[in-house]
Amino acid sequence: MNFSLSSKAITATNTDCLVIGLPENGEWPETTKAADQALGGLIKQLEQAGDLTGKNASVATLPLTEQPWQRVIVVGTGKDDERNLANYRKALIAAVGALKDGPSNSAFICLTDTKIQGPEASASEDARLNLLGRTLEEQLYTFTGFKSEQPPARKLNKVIAQASDADQSQKDAFNLGLATGRGMNYTRDLGNTPPNVCHPIWLAEQAQTMAKEHDCIKTEVLDEKQMADMGMNTILAVGKGSTQPPRLIVMEYRGGKADEKPYVLVGKGITFDSGGISLKPGAGMDEMKYDMGGSASVFGTMKVLAETKPSINVVAVIAAAENMPDGSATRPGDIVTTLSGQTVEILNTDAEGRLVLCDALTYVKKFDPETVIDLATLTGACIIALGHQATGMLANDDELANELLAAGEKTGDRAWRLPLWDEYQSQLDSNFADIANIGGRPAGTITAACFLSRFTKEYRWAHLDIAGTAWDSGKAKGATGRPVPLLVDYLMSHAG
Image (tube, rainbow, N blue to C red):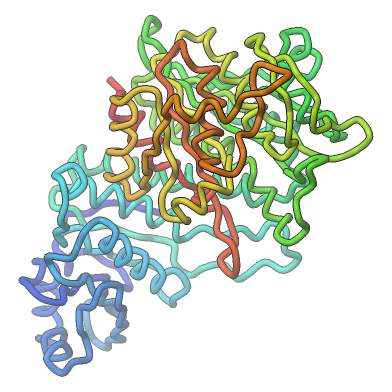
């Protein structure tokens, strides 16, 4: 697919299809006025007749004869005072949905002169161009590599986005949006790959491939012997029941100054989670291939960095293992010594994500990090608390927490902060070890983060529980690519 920007008049841009926005009330954008004039007042006539309402995300396709375009897609953009980032994104999704499987070979999308409500950072034209680029890549995504019959290729092969100036700032915003969308799609590819293919060694191979394709990425992979020598016993404990050995994957992007501390991302990479000896129910267990969603998001974010090359240092660490039951699997009641030296009583082998993460969070101290963010599909309790709309976020630093929340609001990839109070820590008390790996049913998301907090006292840290946002179930089953937009915005805000 060919994407580009243009500041030319709509009649001077040669495409099969024109996409314009129509508000439900208020003044029309200039491109909509120009399109109506070029069509002899057709859009105004249809609006007055009630055929076009402007209701948000409504779509009407107007076939034309002897006109500048073969068809015009009119997308409703809603009421001016209700057009926030979320509703504007719905309109963009509707527009791309009407285009992607349609008959047009090329399209000129004129939706970025539609104003939206919100802070300047999220309502600017640059922000709208960024969101359009991301939405284009995200909505044109397909995952068909494991189907015996491939769908026919789309006719659409060129999309031009309207920009007021098409200057470097606008090009950068649009291109970052496209790169973010590609990063999300890479995250989705990894998540959607079946677990008989996507196992820890395969994940490590993807990191090595990224390093080969991008000179700015350096990859190191620690095998089970190296981890055992270091004392990473909790990662090894999780993987004991599987024939697929664990891996610790380290990717470094060094785009900043040599003496600048890196921002560290840590991803939970459980490539399949049966629950181990504490076996999960069979219904829906196929979706436990998505338990590596944290690592997939880290991969996607690193891909964006590799493409856009910002001036920042970022280290990605992925703790990859497969949690399976067999005669050598870890049992409830086992006590394991972590890399930090703290001992853990494993009361439930299905609380394995925090076990692989705790050793990784101890390991990253070697990088003297500026901040550390871990990402994990960690608790079903987070879905009960927040549903599938917001990522759960807990942190030991208010400034970091506020920056992540702001990045989520700006990108529409929202998070919600939960408390990390000392009062919850006692739920993890063990009679036999320093800490238990579960704290009972109450506040399950919080006690999981409390567990991780025991290993993050030496740096600024935030935990993102993406159990409710990393994938969709039902008819729309598939990885979502979240929270790559949030992470990219946060990191770019710190790039020099």
